[in-house]
Amino acid sequence: MFILYIFILFTSSGDLSDNQNSFKQLESNHATISYVEADKSEAEKAQKIIESAWNEFSLYFSIQNKEPVQIWIVRTPEDFSRMTSGRSSFLYGGVARPGSGIIVVKSPRLRKWNEDFAGTLRHELVHVFLNRAGLDEQIPLWFNEGLSMLLANEYHWGTGLRMSHIVLTNRLIDYRNLDRELMLTTSPDTTSSAYIQSLSMVQYLYKKLGSEKFWEMVRGCKNKRFVQALGDIGGLSLDEFWHGYRRSMWIVTFMGALATGSIFTPIALLAIFVFLWIWRRNQQKMKEWEKEEGEDEQLGIRTVPWEHLTQEPYDWEMKDDDEW
Ligand SMILES: [Zn+2]
Image (cartoon, rainbow, N blue to C red; front, side, top):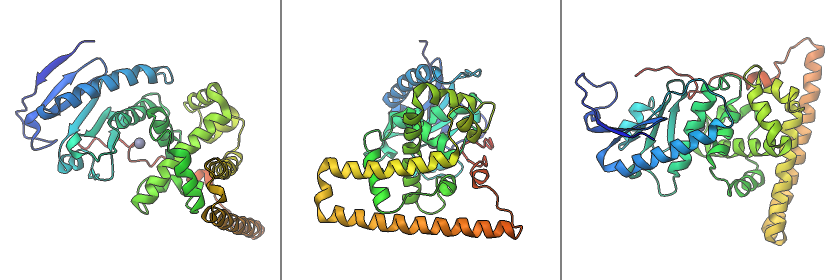
């Protein structure tokens, strides 16, 4: 691997950041990392992470554009916000501009104690790969995020537990709202649940289809929309997938409670009772909606299938506006 240190001297007035003069660059086969001297060891760590992740992800995605990614390790909330179109470093671990191959991450002094630097870099790199493989226009945002989390090995062990909590507190996000919630529309807490749920849905699909079919389906999205690839290659309609997933979440929650013995505690019994009550109420509501839809149809009112609503390519991460 060839490594080169360059001290960059910008002569023109800055587009990127006021303190850009102090950024140095570390270059390797697949990444150019900009950092300030105090973060030199982080830059070296980032380089190792990217090089190994690059080789790993190349097995799953075939990409033509092998240009190195541009990594920026920033030290202040202002720089983070400036380089990510106003995003807050308190809410985001990292941000990618997949079309330009730019990844912005935080220096240790900006990170919270539990932030996973390697996971964040890997996650953002998956977004770049999905873009370069020509897939990100065809897949919904939840699948893009969930797959990035899966390959980044983020929250691997905690997902089941967090999903049980989400299910028991009736915060499972409806499929039609998931992409919207990922974009911080309600609250940071809902967005965080939306990310976990996206990962758990991708994990479910991966288990359901098996590795070979799963990847065949992902690659199939190069030529067709996600829902079509899911049907043609995965043999599942969107409805079958969503209902199967929700059923599986209930089983995960129940087995989790059983395995830890907590099912016999009064709180767990109460939670399950409440869950069943809410679940039954939702089922009844769904039946009512179906009835209303039937009546609408008789009256000639057309309903747009909800899978169409979730297919809009409105992810800010995918829109590459290149404004700087
Ligand atoms: Zn992401």
